[in-house]
Image 1: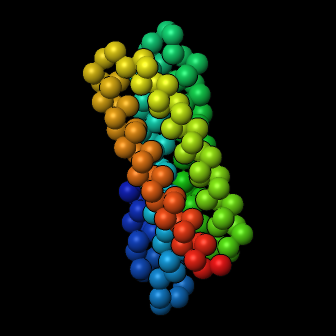
Image 2: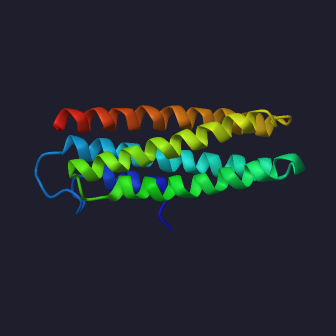
Length: 149
């Protein structure tokens, strides 16, 4: 099973097969960081979805959150281990990541309305932090791609 820690090790390992050149590609590095943080966001959103699913009034929200988390997980993997750093492909991946981030962020805020238990409140806080961290990394990747163009 591929975890976010495994992907992070592969993304930052200079002896990995992903690194062909002797110098580190800033676009590739920024995309890998965004991918790893998007994977973490997907994990946090899935955990929140599982907690919210126990509440009868929020089952639809839990399903939506878990579906969005799975899509973010797939996109995070593509960002983290994608060997391609072409400008057009990278920009489209970043745009998809922004949309995934936005959807999960909205669902996390809706889930905050159902946070009656402390474990749900804590998971909402973790998910908000993951949204912020992934958003910053995605924005950094967007800026690096724009600077390279």
